[in-house]
Image (tube, rainbow, N blue to C red; front, top):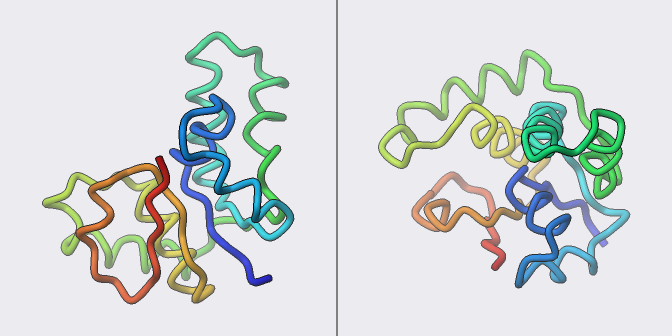
Length: 127
């Protein structure tokens, strides 16, 4: 099975046992997450009252592979700003998409607006 890239939104959905999140369970072990998205999940969990270490464990729990955000991803994420700005994509969203593009891997999110993107990467909207 090939790798898939997880957006922060889908990690949070799985951790919250939201509808549709069971789709990700089929891919556990083949998941890739950017450190930018892990920071986003960690912060969201902490803002919900989850203690720091537990929040971090939750954030990394679905990551089969963690990939550090590097200069190549940063450049591509910056390049993605103009074509995605009208949809309100965050830096975390663009970091996730940049990683998926560079890995030539499908990306999973819960953000329905991503369906409007035409970036040459397969986007799966869960939930």
